[in-house]
Amino acid sequence: MKFVSIVMGSKSDYDVMQECIKILDKFYVPYEIIISSAHRSPKRTHDYIKNAEKKGAKVFIAGAGMAAHLAGAIAAITTKPVIGVPLKGGALDGLDALLSTVQMPAGMPVATLAMGKAGAINAAYLSMQILALEDEDLRAKLEEDRVLKAKKVEIDSSEIEQFL
Ligand code: RP5
Image (cartoon, rainbow, N blue to C red; front, side):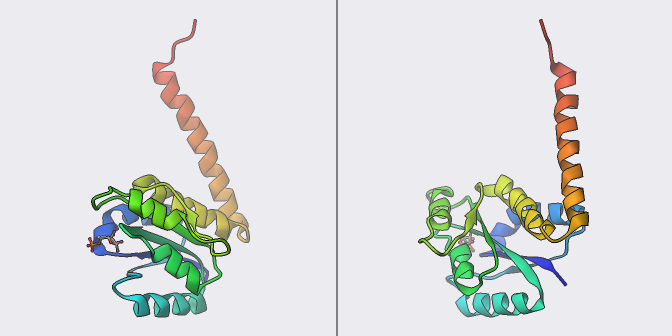
């Protein structure tokens, strides 16, 4: 079965990464989610990624804070797309995680998204867009979602807009 794999570095990341699974649930996209750390449990991370690939993981999402090497460590193990979500926290409040996740050396890409909740939500959307390259039903659902978003802008505006 094709699925999205979500890995987070610590239980303390779960609150934010739940935003990601809420979106995948909404679109009925199957996923796995685990805690595994690049630093604290490197073997577990390696073994999980290898096993998830065998089971059908098509894209990996990594959420981590501080010296956030998780997404890069996963990118070192797989050639599947890796999406990184830098998380806030620590003395630098997420700037450390952003730079650790985004500044990958050439040839080892991590698609790094916004810090925190927006990044977690966008990770779900980007992973679905990747799956939708080979899934017409999912592509149609994503297009419908865009139409609804545009409608909501109009509805929100209609409540307050003024023209001369
Ligand atoms: C990272 O260190 C985790 O992803 C987490 O964001 C951060 C702090 O972890 P805890 O000390 O809260 O477990 O590995």
